[in-house]
Amino acid sequence: MIRAALALLALLAGVAGAAAADRLVIAVSAERVQITSTYTGDDIVVFGTIERDDPMTAGKRPEDIVVVVRGPRGQYVTRHKSRILGIWVNTDSRYFVDTPSYFAIHSNRPVDQIADLETRRLHQISFDGLILKRPGGRVEAMLPDTFVASFIRLKVAENFYQEKPEAVTLPSPNLFRASVSIPAEAAVGAYGVDVYLFSRGVLLAQQSTHFEVTKTGFEQLTASASRDRPALYGFVVVCLALITGWLASVIFRRD
Image 1 (cartoon, rainbow, N blue to C red):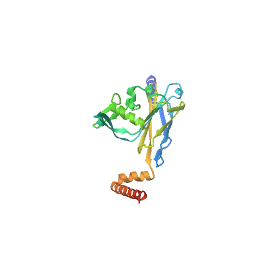
Image 2 (cartoon, rainbow, N blue to C red; image 1 turned 30 degrees about the horizontal axis):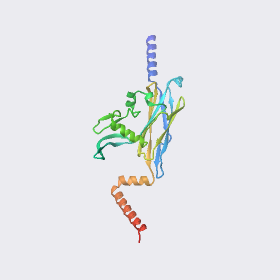
Image 3 (cartoon, helix red, strand yellow; image 1 turned 90 degrees about the horizontal axis):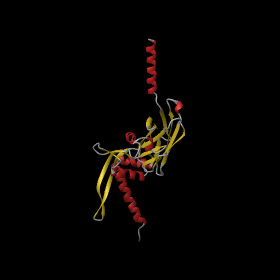
Image 4 (cartoon, rainbow, N blue to C red; image 1 turned 60 degrees about the horizontal axis):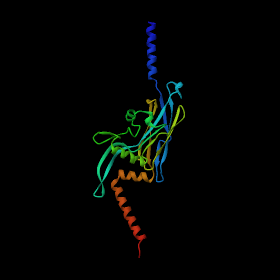
């Protein structure tokens, strides 16, 4: 009887030990980024701590942090141009739906050294592992599709897609931080932040948070009017255009 009870206790202790796991506690420096007429971009700092199931492992095993920020999703199109009779024209196109308008990958070292391609595709934490959706539910990986590669290349050139392999710093074995750049033309809406903790290619923990990008002042008034009262907005725009044209003709009139 005593042996059976001891065996049961050992089994329960083993289950509890297996259930215990490392945990991430994360936060962002600002929960809201406000776009005004003078907005030229901003930085959001993602920081946090690693709470381990065994504190004795701190600093004794290789660990990697990957911070991924995804902006509001939308539909985008990539067009292929060909030269016909000396004129460049659009000859093909590819539409992508439910696609992040902003996609930033920050890590303490190159992501392809942190996790294999299958893991990167599973969690969408690298450009080469990014999977874009097409209308009808069809999905396509980046390589070797030239349309996906071109789409990402254009987004990178506009600073909407970022991959920075040394942007995450670890001041101590339990702390990490990353500064994420939000461009001036960032889309308005919710931005999801996902942080992943890896060790030797194995995902140990994951945590998520978010922040908002909003418009304020005259920009917000204009955006709200165009969305909520399109007829009135159109009428005001036409009137302003007529008034501006009349003033220009008066100012630059030659008698």
